[in-house]
Length: 287
Image (cartoon, rainbow, N blue to C red; front, top):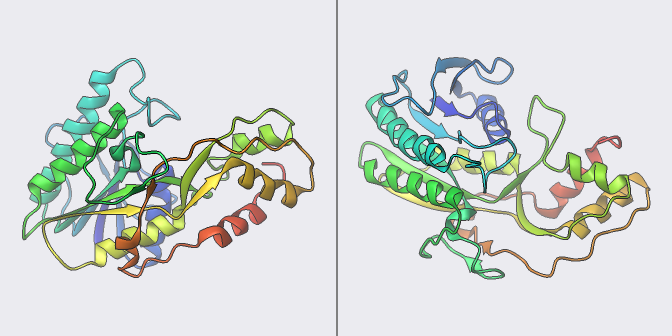
């Protein structure tokens, strides 16, 4: 397939582009500048475009998000109106342009944030009523609804509600825990935290499966692998490096955990804790 992708240079985009290209798909990065190391083509695009001119393609994957550097929740910074305008209006315009360009499917990278944080410790399923309690969660939900409104027999839409993504993105050397690992090895105090995670390669496999899925209209899938406490994560690192440091206390609260049984019925089999241990084993000791 000829696939357009936004956010190709980001963490998620790099995992997706590398995997789909390895499967023989021609990846066209949509953005402000080419991503020569991972994409096989480029077309200029920006979320501020009110009527994007997109090249003809079979499918679109939308990963891009306008946000303050390093932040998703709270990514609006000091300008929530711009955050909302680019990520909602820009996303609507993109989906319309993709449909006009002949794409028969669009995949939107949404987030667990659409459920909100009120249901800590509960199981979250796709049929639950969304209840975002952050602007980030709201714009992701608005993006889902924009795609649902356009979906029909010719243009199907899939929203993947994704949890935290770990792993080293192709073409880079750092990862989401690089700073955390350095602080831990330096003996600094680490704040307790528990979160749900999925490896970027497993997320890429989920995207590949929904691209290959038959059907029309609109659908939603949760994409999450396991719940991870920082204490357990850093204990694995300590065993890997042989360095003694104070482990943080176990977190006293846990987030709502997305049930991923629907995407698993498509054959999705994430790597679980074995993949996490492999990742830790491959980390540079100097990370």
